[in-house]
Image 1 (spheres, rainbow, N blue to C red):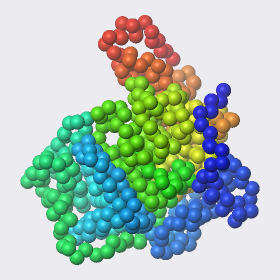
Image 2 (cartoon, rainbow, N blue to C red; image 1 turned 135 degrees about the horizontal axis):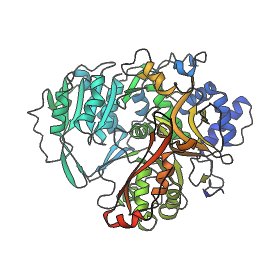
Image 3 (tube, rainbow, N blue to C red; image 1 turned 90 degrees about the vertical axis):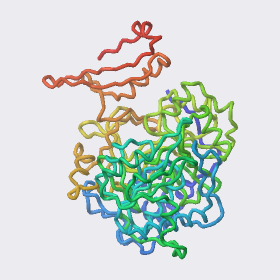
Image 4 (spheres, helix red, strand yellow; image 1 turned 30 degrees about the vertical axis):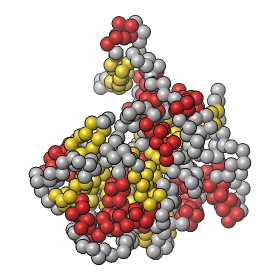
Length: 585
């Protein structure tokens, strides 16, 4: 039974409608619905991306000669927009006026800080000059070990402006996590901070920074930001270290105007995710993010985007790209439930956030604690909520519409670090159905396949993508022949991107239900299902089950598999629980 929770307002015109009209008029085709446009986009991949390039007004210094190397198969990693020269940072900094570009607030600095586009451009100019002064050049790696603050964004754009490569570790990472992420890529400069505040507790960062620097021998400069006011800035034990104000003073007072190295479309921009060390390029990241912001998220003048994310999650990269549209972004660092569970919703009211992004786990926590922003907050400007990170349970769809806002567009989105973007998600032109992702995104030719490579509808299978897209990784670091790359995505179905997600496509709505990772798919007695299906049952025992882990155990001799569910049960509920849970396969 279909359960419709939201429908597009009557007469509401979206950016997708505007873009569709361009295609209809230019190519004289009949595209009456989103699904017509989607089919055209995957049947005409090159034309779609060429039209979007000009629609979104990509800034470039040299035009492209060819949109896509169509003679190459997907697993040969075809190049996009060959011949073009551009810069990601230049596109993000195209505006230079007194409108607010960034709202920033944290537990460490609870007073709201605002940066205009003028101030953002000038800050990037100063950081760029300092990086250039210490020898950072094209292809060098600059890394940060920082919280989600304006400085992280500024360093990212300054690095990109030089054609250097940016990588980030969140300030809550331990030393092992930092060294695993950075040791392979041999950074020249690292930015850290003195401390962070989380859950009202101050956590020292200098000791972790010192220990991390000790095992990163290629570092030439360690720059420290006083993120927590009045906390120690004793750098005496950290070699090659300097406080950020002294670092920025190094080039002197006569700093050159902000410039941007012009690089090929596929030039490395970000390195994310250890141990793969996935490299994403300037152009692919930019154009796919802008498609998702402008078309799928329907960003317009007056929108303000917030995503609760750490800098090490790809949603941070996704968030910051929206300033290329002139959309202000909100950076928040700290606990999302301190001083109470309404913290982020209070922030939405204070700033006027229109698009609110978070993890599925965050929404689940709100539901479990019976939090009702609908009654506590106004949320007058909020029109879209985005959720990702894990499958969003049908129950949480109900919760959002009952306890947060009844007329909000709830966009469950799916993609990942591997593509630094989304395969499917929010769609302002289609209805929201309980438990479903609304649709594939334009020009993302995704399908649900059986183990035998047969396209499925209404049955569960592997999420695959059958045609190339611009935000495919450029390569993996230290993978010169592309072996690791091909094994990661093209081993199971030769020439077809396998995302290792287990999903189901609804035969009527064409919405997508995510069922968990397929590399963790459970298959007892030939019955395939995702771990999310088990967790959805466990979630019904709120207050009794504190934590759970569902795994498969395979018999190497027979090939048979059984499913084991580990439960951490509340001490006060153990006796009762023994009589209530029975789980056998």
